[in-house]
Length: 336
Image (cartoon, rainbow, N blue to C red; front, side, top):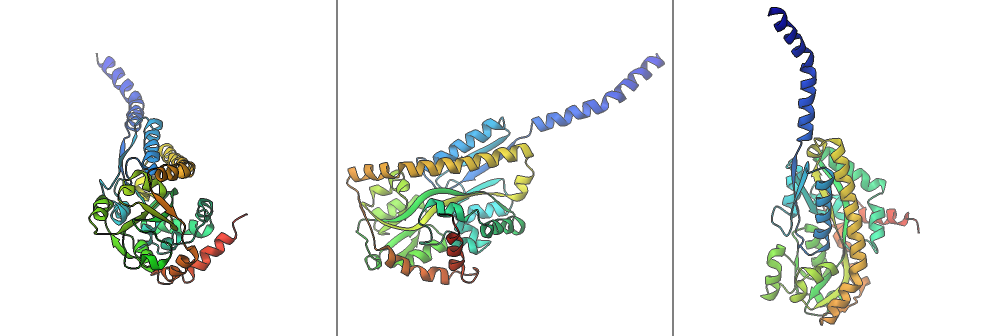
């Protein structure tokens, strides 16, 4: 009997590493992380649609290990508060205009400054330059914010009112709703309007009730978020290239298994490409549909508006001196 017990004990000791290894594999198989992703866009806007695809693809490719829960139209923290959640280390993905990164590295304000780009391609070239890549590295190292993408481009932003706007003088005294970004506030003020920061959830009723005289945004938004119901005219100022970045905390990301990190990065990159293609392809059809419904579009004096916003770059707090000329110099290097 003693020999039998001894034999069983030896077998148990020999098998212990195997059991331990099996337990570790089970824990890997059971890995599960919930990431809450938040932005202000409406359910039928292209950014929301593209991010739905990203969410589903990540869930599918990780067999449910990474569950990105998608909250649109300001259901959770957005704008400055959303980026702050990321910086603080929450299991949170913020999808916001890069100007909100300007609270951490001021030069990001200039990256998406007014009247800087003439095409999507110019912006996509800019964010790959060593200049901007250096900012991204600093953002990770000093502020723990990792940028998964910077080019969820939703189009050029224009003025949407019930008045025809052609020159800066036509904007004088008009209250225009803007998001709560200092860059937007300063730009619309410089263009001649009275910038009025309001959350988008209250914006349409604010226009209807005369609290503001209009808003600004893209063709995609005009055709899908209800703003065309309260503002019948779009002045094609193209004062900003509308784009969002996707941000996650560096430490949160680094704790994710490498195979899942790769999938997350691949799918957010693919999502940006999908969105940009859809926005480009749908611009003319959206405009034509709105025109058929009685909406008007007009060209503006672009040079006059460009002159009004020069002071925005000069007055940006904390940016590298001469940042506008630096950025224009980078664009000049872009292959033709």
